[in-house]
Length: 473
Image (cartoon, rainbow, N blue to C red):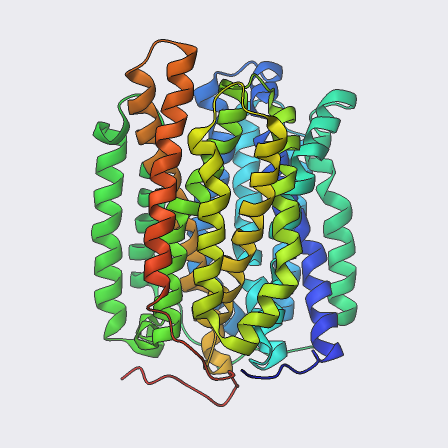
């Protein structure tokens, strides 16, 4: 067992400087998700049209992520962070001024561009500041926005819709962006641009439609027809082909490619990215089921379902510090195995639940499940950066972010198909509850599978440092 050392105060300052701004991105996602029905009614738009408020944001996010490493080398991390905050702030203000659904969707794209830069850059700046030390504890800090979002976001969104008008859904981002901008100017160290490199335009032309196609195809799975729809199969297959072409091309270009995919020869990064993708089914797929279960089976409204889900976020919040310290001291393997096991146990009550199940029992199960979520994601993210050189961190951030994004979309789409199929076979409220039970059993099965795959993780990893580089030749 390794001993952990205190985190450098300079690293803490860097972390809080970027976390405050990142809260705007995370809160925005969860706040808007509870308001889609209200926006559809207020803006006189169909549900299919208003759904593009989320879809357009997701696609813009996915398109922007691959260029973050190149942009950071071009202008420097601090400058790029300030640019991304300014873009997200401008997008938020424009969203609040939108006059119809079309303009709101367009302005959400601007928000997505800013958020797409901020999410991978958040990890990069803090890990580079830490010099690869205490990665578990660092990841516990980095995960704070993602933990607070599901806890606070739905409540803020519900209160705004109840007491204010819908533009305040976006005005609430402004204080976080302004405070984050001021803190970044004052606290982030000045880092000059690295050796400037030309943009890998052919690679960008491959990876951009690849990510858009896969995310768009997966987002349509929940509609009637599921996987058999043309707007699912065509963009999904096309995206996979373009992604394969990008990887094949980038493999032979190494440092000249948009993303250095040869870093995947570094087993800690490769294994953690694989599990981050697979965990999308057991983690994010179940997150898709839970609010629907509370609404369809137990009759809760969107705000009520969001409040009930707070206990899961609290559980994740409680496990962060312990998971980070254990990851640093005993390695990621057994922490992740324990985390997936706890997630499985926390999901089991939902596979047996019906409309009459005691809500207190389910809230307790959510807290247990949330505790396991923190014990999974923190060691996996810490492991991904173990042993990497400072210059490799931006590419590793992009790889893990894409794996997480695609895994979450895949998990949500898969369980949506399973739920739809089960619901179609029933016509009674009791049958609807049974359909959700079946879907949760699938989520449990994938959690068990992920537990087994976790045994492939490195048992113990070296403390990363800026002078280490995995062999990529």
